Image 1 (cartoon, one colour):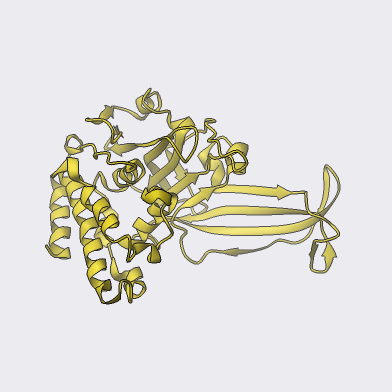
Image 2 (cartoon, one colour):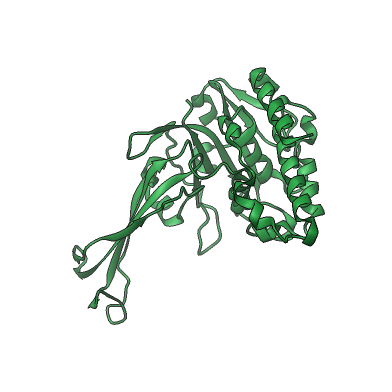
Length: 337
């Protein structure tokens, strides 16, 4: 089937789509993260699929991959992804939706797709943060469709007492391209209690050695970095780093999850999906997904046989199957309310 035919089928599936058509993806040995990501991005009609330009980023990168088979590999990879989207939204072969894609990754692991993406994880699990960025990049729905433009500002200073610091001037840069997924560092996760706080935060460091550190030729012993998510794309993805880098233990402290976030230009995005990690360490546990469908919220666990539907966001927050505030790690926001 051609790419244009697949896109036409997806469009037709959109027209007849209803929430009761959604189905659980089938767990298949360490597939819960990938299943949750697919469900969060593509389970319901997504306007950005109309803007797919798959060849945009990876055609040149694929040159020479697996020798003369590079184009064949890329075409097959593209086809498998498109079939998954079509099946997800049309509820066709719902129990085997991701199986062909996982088989494809294993089939080509020797030649290998890792050359155009970071390693997903050890033990061939394909479960890692990079998989999400890789998936978005392959579909070409990054750039101005997904992510945020980030401004970084930094200054150095001299601290003469715990409460007094003489700061030097700011310097900084602004990303020209949208960062697909914005990662919130563990220290910032511990400092704040609301996702909206992560859109504009400051990190201070008073541990610099004044004998070894200088700025513009002057000795300094402190620094402050200012991170600002300046402009949202049509989809914003926030990734909370809940793992303590010192102990490796996941912190389940609660955060506030607003249904709407607004950037510096006044553009608003609305909560569309949340992926939760159920476990004490990122090396173990299980991933599940809450996904908005109309006014309802759908809970997908690929080890269960059926979806759980909540009539309101408040009901979803009170779910006993997974606590969004304490276990949410990936938050998807979209311009479409």
